[in-house]
Image (tube, rainbow, N blue to C red; front, side, top):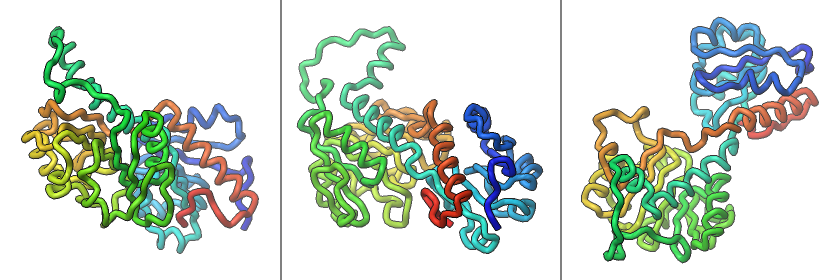
Length: 323
């Protein structure tokens, strides 16, 4: 059965906050759309939809009330919440939004690197106290320059590759780590398999995680990895919270065994008010906002429109195809 044309399609946008329907309307596609903000409304409205654009609101049980559903466009890169077998059994296609925030996350990671090097967290704290810091004689306590420093990037895909290019623009040396080193350096000076990371950690001034959460990367930065880093080195995590042993990181920061950390993701989100991370002067915390920019909705819609075009043309392969 042919995929419907624009005049026969209904798209359901399901997200608690994103302005997807509003941005979609500006494109003048002629495609009917609805927008829901919670799971109850999703279950009530999905029956009229041919296409669903969703991420966190999805549950496989929704399939029972979605007789028309033909295609799901994930709003995010992750698709673990979807049962591939269940979708395939119903003939429903699925595509991820992988790469949708590559520019945003790589820029955020670089911003954290710069903030740590230039001690912007301390400057903001001093501003709130109306304290003008004097000149510093101790070289180890001054702001630093990035030129000549070494950055390790763990995960050298779209995000890590762009970060490598940004770092190179600051005259940094970039060492990349990925599951399959043969897949290429993607802008880095050197590339190794993940198993080689412990041996190279002492080389790094910055260790930046941009990798997906997998069995291999869960807990990748634990007590041993932190102990291998230089006391002057910084850790930046824009990947997933569980890639880092949070308790070990807190200890390393409290004991000044590493210089500091830029943290966009934590194991539990929102971060609990009682977390020791909040009180660490050598940590900068952002609330999992690395990927969120004013362009995020439009970036997702670009992928959606590409895939709708492919489905309507009868093409077998989707952009970022999962099912």
